[in-house]
Length: 285
Ligand code: URA
Image (tube, rainbow, N blue to C red; front, side, top):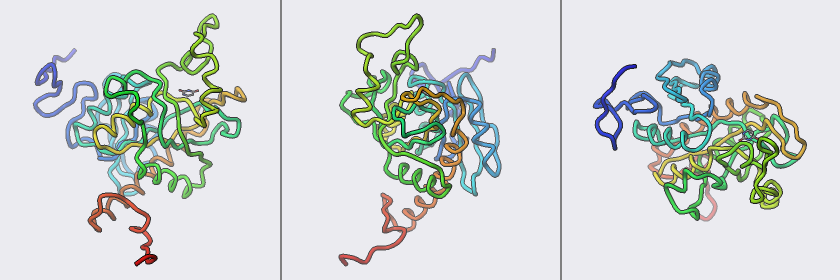
């Protein structure tokens, strides 16, 4: 085991800026970073790029950087759940990333959101503990409107079936998503959770979005999420990897779109993207 000395216990990076968990340093990643949970999915995402190179791999975190349609892009795995995801956001932000798109899998709560469809999140219910260590529970876990719009634009361009709305992020895949635990364990406070969230128009369960959205808002960064529906909690279907290629293609294309919009903002000296930057608007002038 290599002994590496970090600056300090409260600032665990080396003098070159290598981060303790992700083992990445400034210059290693693009400002646009895709965030799958699974390290293997990083390679799958990179297989769609024009070129890709391995950056680092340590514990659950694997990072590749490359070019997609000429745009510098990176992908880093977060592992499953919010604690490891918060570490990824912290360390990616420290080395210069400012735009995150989670590319994951999810369980739909509604019959009409079928296996293989994709869901683009506008926000997430914070049913996890990590984001509550950062900020009060009333603070909203909302996606960046620019990232949401770019994901929708990408799904339209690629002709992929998509749904847009609010997700719920949990800390538990089984009991926390009202799946029976071992020996059918289910605490009373989780009985009826699916129905309750469905009535509130929540689309799906997953385990990372609310932390990514909350931390990104606190730090003034942009984040969004596109997930492939592999489970349907109403029909009880479950198909591993269904829609994953579509979600990946949409996320990659959204980065290309965002980079074009960011360039447009830069040229027109605007802080925020608006439709009139693209098509102009004469009315009211
Ligand atoms: N991921 C989840 O968190 N839940 C599901 O049902 C499927 C994927």
